[in-house]
Image (cartoon, rainbow, N blue to C red; front, top):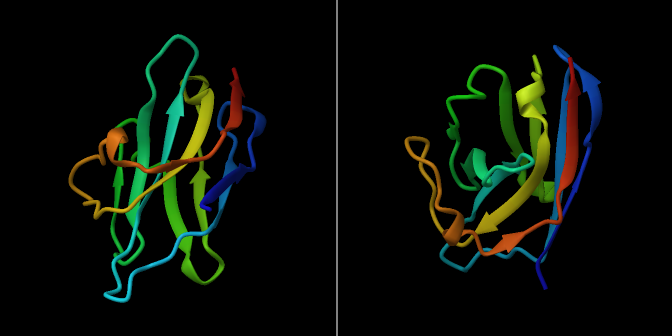
Length: 131
């Protein structure tokens, strides 16, 4: 049973920072060493869910949405099955519910993973940025 649990959301002012964590359990690699695409997605009120950042568990580079490049950093701790999203220089437009997701697929740093290709989702953690 795969479970993804996000934490670290909260309310901060513009320019502040937050670090989101996603504790993953039940993700197992095959004997061939195939990994997972793990990513952070967000959905703001009245808007569609969008990808924020994604990283392949057996790679070193990551994909970032243009809106967060240079401000957000995705990282993972494979030993502890935890995914992180360090968010700096936060803006009001970053306000959203942030979701962790994992897919049994490769993901590239050049293009966003399709949401339909993510097999597991967390319940989300709310990030609110005030001006």
